[in-house]
Length: 80
Image: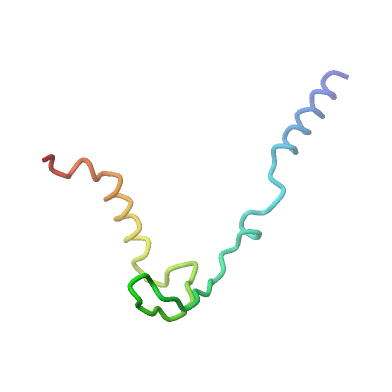
């Protein structure tokens, strides 16, 4: 009887701990339209569509290079 109760309790805790929503489906990235605007200098910016994923073939390489730069920034900068 105790083993059965322990089994049901552990199953219940596992089900409670699971996230019911599918993060990939509910938070699917979609293109976003950026409306035309005028900045503080008076320059006009045309409206455009911002894609959720870069179409650049070097996007991953550039992202990794940027991450490395900012994570090791203090190591290579000279002290004044």
